[in-house]
Length: 118
Length: 133
Image (cartoon, rainbow over all chains, first blue to last red):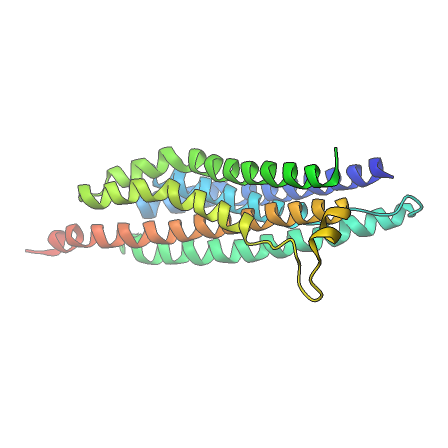
């Protein structure tokens, strides 16, 4: 059924966006304080926070949008769940790699820019 | 709508969407980026960076879009086989969007790293001056 395929795809998109927003909110306050202490440049904190949101959102969406959701009409309900699972694998994989990349970036930033007496 | 028209339409829409993603990323990061760049004390470097930022965002999105081949690989499909299969065309469109998003993520991370290096380099003389007697 085309409708069920679309519904499964929509669920996958919503879940992946939800994961990205949840991780962003989890990190937001501590990261803002760290950036404010390290950067001391107008717009610096805002730029790196916005960059984190873009990185998380786009990498999660890249995992979910790339999923080919075309099950046959006679497919069972659990097959749609498996298809969502399969899409989530790519979402988690992309999110993890992007987070590691961002973590490396923030580590370099904090190590090089943070004043030594703080 | 014939399959060939569908292929052309989705290709053009995909390209527009990829460009739109690049522009949206630029618009979202533009204001804080310009604030950082304005704090640099080198007008020429500031001008170069200011111009390169949107260009790299658009190029990253388009690079992701065009890097997906409709012919596939092992075994490659013929044009007739591609046009005949709408599901394959949609899957390729999805792959194009996913790749464009991936390249945009990479571009954002690289710009973050580049700004860190620039801030470090431009801050160093001030820090060393402060340490001088």
